[in-house]
Image: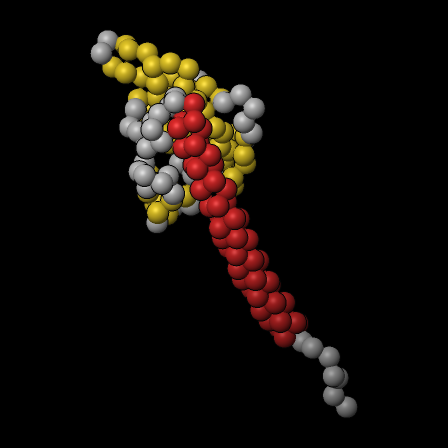
Length: 161
């Protein structure tokens, strides 16, 4: 009479196939959840840009959004200028956190390049040399969000892919 059990080889083959399928499913779920997080952050970024543009126009000051890494997240905060300082014929806009503004967590660290988007007093995008705390650079018209390049429309402040 034959024994109706599995051999060791058959059992190991089944375990290997199941583990490969589980790892593929895990990667698929991780990719989908990352994509959903990115898609849900784009409207937040768009609304922050619109808010900043309106703040600049309403107050007659330079205003913008500062994207930066904090711990394991990318954050954004609305910034506004106090005054423009002229250092040896080089105009630098010193930006401060807008009083009462929230800090928004947008996604995982590295999700957006560290940058600042600045709007002029008229509500148009501006290229200015800016300084926030220890970060000093030119303001930017381009955002790289999860390795996808976006441009910001100069007139509306909306993201364009």
